[in-house]
Structure formats: structure tokens, C-alpha cells
Image (cartoon, rainbow, N blue to C red):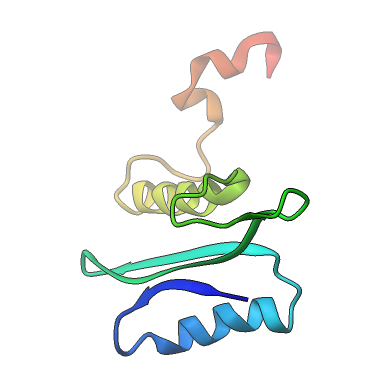
Length: 104
């Protein structure tokens, strides 16, 4: 399986684990990128985007991300709460009055 892309020195283990996903864990196609201090330190891709058609995974292959924003949303909520913008004990309708419609 050809893995393409780059890793900055010090991040070689990321490439090793990425390759292991194909060799040992049945990965078909994937990409991985990481940014540290505004520097792209990992930019990897490999495998197949469409195994039935034999289409390779490219640097710019588009994929569904589904639930990836849940973690970021949770962090934003925790940050807002830690700055006193709301309390976890507040009723939802306090911040979203329309939510109270229908006796909720």
C-alpha cells in the first residue's frame, strides 16, 4: 500500500501508525493531517477512495465528516461556561426562548 505525503521530523511515529492501519487493521483508504503552532507537521494519505472502482485516495479526496464537530462543540460550550456566559443548570429556554414552545 502506497502512503503518500510528508511528516515533519519528530512525527515519524504518526506515519508508522498510519501505515499500520492499512497493514494490520484493514484500513481501505484514509488521510491524516496535523497542525502544530500553525505548521502542518503531518500530511498523509493512501489507499483507495473507492475500492470498487479502484479509485486511489488523493491528497484532495473529499470525504464525509459526520460527527467530527461534536468534540469541538463540546470544547466551545465548556469554554463559554468557564467564562460565565451560562450555567449548566440554566434551563435551555433561558438562552433559546423558542425551545420552550409547546410547554417544554
